[in-house]
Length: 502
Image (tube, rainbow, N blue to C red; front, side, top):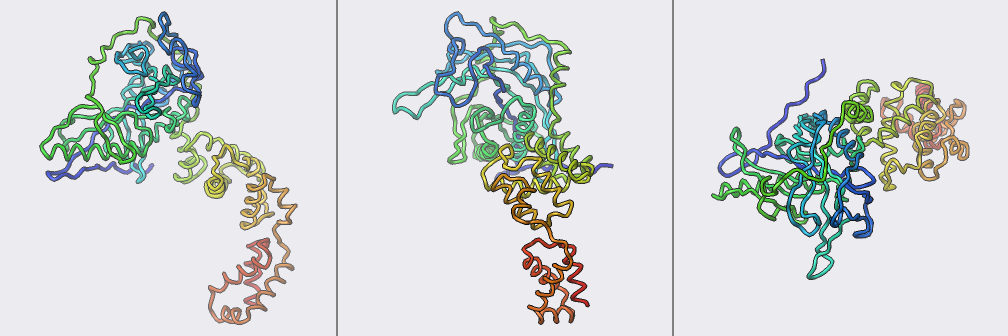
């Protein structure tokens, strides 16, 4: 039987009048990976000059009509399938009416009553191993607004419409989240999933993924309290801080005799606090109605099947396979499956290593995984690079591990050769030959080095023979140093023991 997952614990906010429970729901806005916007052909590339990627449709010029981008629909369906959600074969776009300088139309084309994706779920795992399933209410497609810039002029605001019209998936969780840690784990897990699917790049610092954080508090067992919504929080850490601060603020407000009002708030990263922005609108305030310029979206089972077939192995399945099939520890499985690029690199290196050594992948998986997660990741961190920019390729690493497996390189030499590979980009075999780093297994040379060490340390040799067994490690170190780390460790141990005891 498999071991049961640890039980979830309850996060409590301590108040002067007792304990309070947090209730959190998250609305994550994820920009869809597509070359063009949701209803126009304008580019979605990040970093262009302001207003350089704005079509007549985006600018709401008279007579312009939206045309749906089929790739955005496909990506939304693929995302829905990845969270095991209901896919609605009939969905409709609505107009959400509000006025803001960076929304030229005076309304946002969105989906309210008939979203493209229905109920699904995402399993999260906290740092202490607790697992929990968070319900997802819906995913709907909508167009993004532009961006108002307030800090370039003392008395005027500028408007950049490059982002206006970009396709967003709004992923709405159920109010199942009960702590800052759960909120953080949910967003991190969702980001990982979106990046695996390829439907969003997850670059929160660029605004392509951000969350509206809905928080309320209640006594245990009581109905939900009044919630506030903190808009456009753009990092996992800030989302956790928003939940923590807003819950504390609400508890203090209620216990001092005040009332929480339904409102929209903003998070201040500098102070780690939230502040009021405006009263929170309800659906009727936006005067939703079906968009008359767009036909409903209709697709068949074949389209859904094609979307499903295009999905990669998802993170949870990959982790499980690494543990059950390759025998990796849960930690290594999680580290190596954290990003699709990392997993692909590992699997390529693993296949090459198994081929070079002539053993099944299951027999060399732990060896390759440990080296990648420690030595390679450590070297890349020092260089400030990710695995896609590694100066050592998967096949080059496989060659190094094969040289260790066949006895050409000892452990210390492996590290020495690897450092040279990182520095030069040369192959392991080239470095071994060019620098004469081949492991020495000649017992005559090793015996000579041992005898020289014993002759230089007669008192320690006497102490060892007198019962101070811990000195054995000292002699091993001295011999390895004398042979510049090239001596085969197993032979050194065997010959040293024989000469000390002889």
